[in-house]
Image (tube, rainbow, N blue to C red; front, top):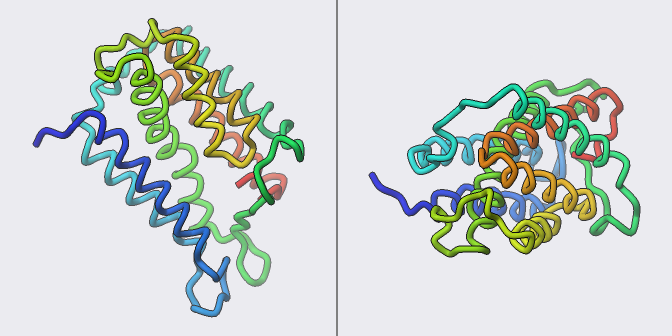
Length: 224
């Protein structure tokens, strides 16, 4: 089955955002709500649905079919991902934050960690989200800004305008908008610099994965 290259990148992201909106509208936050259902499991469902969509559209993601990276490219991805993580946890200034901070505390009624919630949160954060977001923000939107036939747009020829505008909208998706803007610029630069989408995907995964472990170690649930 042939899919529109644009829709293959838009649909997983759109479904992800629908889950985000649905979660914000649910009245019962966490375990023990009036409905008796732990609404935190909505994230688990979201991760599984988006993962299934990515698998369904996989043939359309031609830029991800080549896994070959040089040691230099892999190192650049890891170092930049760590740098974005350090920036992320230090740029939570009140003026650089949209609205009130929300938190996802994966704890049970007795205060113990719910490892089912943690496992799916980490898998979604470090594996599903980086692939889904880089396909939408960098592979599709960043190239589309320069050329609506985005598959014909060579990443290395991305304009500064395309990198900045796609990063600006990427920032609007995140509560920490300044951190989101800088992260978007970094990931966009990596894609333009190397021409390989796996480089920003890995960088994004390193940022999110390390952030997840840091949150677990420190209990700073508001960063989730």
